[in-house]
Image 1 (cartoon, rainbow, N blue to C red):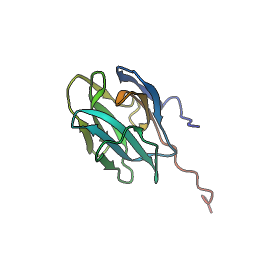
Image 2: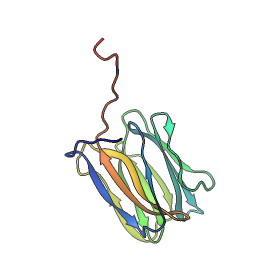
Image 3: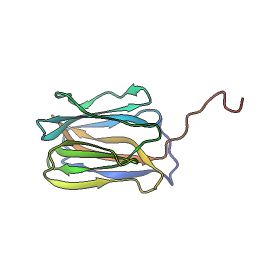
Image 4: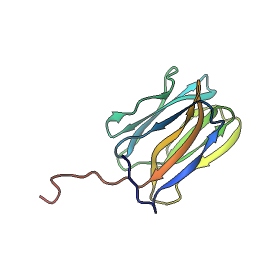
Length: 153
């Protein structure tokens, strides 16, 4: 179960048509890598996040080779932007180091998601999928440091 301090948690309302089955990508700790599958440089087919060393299940569909960004130590996703119509047409994940992962074709309505608290980062996404990603919403919070049983020894 995920718990956040309410003053640091924020939610970016989903964009897209919202048709299909709901999804959520979540995990323990911070996001350490992102994969995105696109269809012929057109719309977004699927997502996958890595939390620590563990990859989440894939949401949507694998289609060809994914675009991938591995985050450095201390790096975090602080913005998601892109374009949408019926499907999510394009997505750009931006890190606090200014690096980006871009996928899809930039056509349709623009969106820009970011946390309301300056120290928060992307914790998980949710939305809907029907053949491809039909909506995406972002959940932002501060990642709690890992509990170490040997701390102070």
